[in-house]
Image (cartoon, rainbow, N blue to C red; front, top):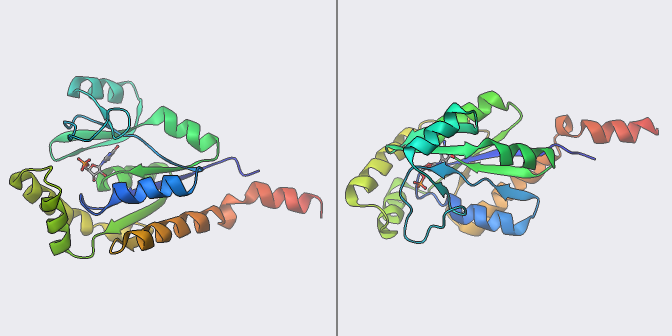
Length: 203
Ligand code: 5GP
């Protein structure tokens, strides 16, 4: 009936909890798929190539840009990050809700290219808690933590550009809130045109 999926962007400072939320969302609903990004950043100890990210060289990444295979990309903390285009197109045409976990520059590009996309900004409860989360995960050295905190301040300034704002104070509640957003967005009249036509055709 409704064949076109919804493109959803989730942004939020590093350490705001995007990964935990997305893995729970994908478990909750098989119609939700999370896009796997490509990056030139080095993998963290537990990260799996092809699952956490596609870890590639800068040359490879640039070739993907040149050949039009990236939906969007941005440079963050000196590394390239981007969304491979083909799988997103496929999921959308099969009616899936596709979530892109991307930073603010990429989110802006998606809003421009896909005006019917939905964007959610995930906020940590406070900057102090964000700093504590970044330090306790011990994946970045102190310089990198400082760099991520200053990028966070820049990102938070742009939260008003997003359609929705969710505070990740309690994980289950944040997951429920984002799931509610997705469910409500699916019911937007503008997305239901095919169904409406079918219903009124027999009236
Ligand atoms: P991290 O190094 O912590 O995994 O990611 C750093 C930032 O890059 C996060 O804000 C993350 O959401 C963002 N990011 C991850 N993948 C992409 C992508 O494909 N495109 C863009 N624009 N940002 C991404």
